[in-house]
Amino acid sequence: MFGNSNVHNAVDAAKIAERENKQPFLVTDRDLKHWQKDAADGIYPALPFPSLGTYVPKGYKVTGSLVLDTTAVGLEGKPTLTFRTFVGKLREGFAYAVTEAEESRVHIAEFEPVGELEAA
Image (cartoon, rainbow, N blue to C red; front, side, top):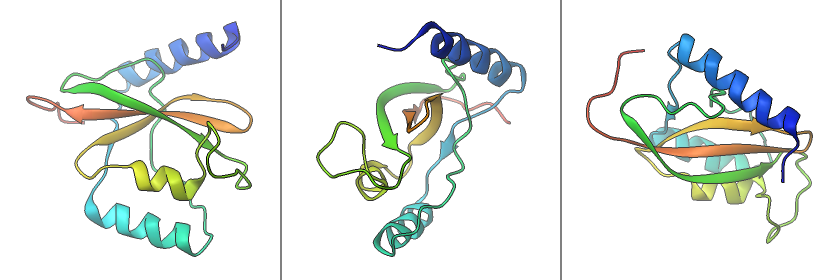
């Protein structure tokens, strides 16, 4: 369970994301190959996923969520995903955004584009 400050942060992030018309990052095959290579090489790059909090932009539906271990020392098989496992779960043609950030993990929503997407 998350504390009230995390809930407020997610709501505040949603308000900002909606006001700024932020969109989740649409993952391509090129992105996946790049991140898979980084993971194999032990590199943990900054990911381009915007913070949307609880905001779901028009043209998208949430299809899942992932929790990434940001300590870079996570163990496989734990509830939080190592970078290598996380990258293996990303899907080409789906979009991703941060919904909540904590000290040692980041919650990331998976979005499926549906219908017409708004121009950013």
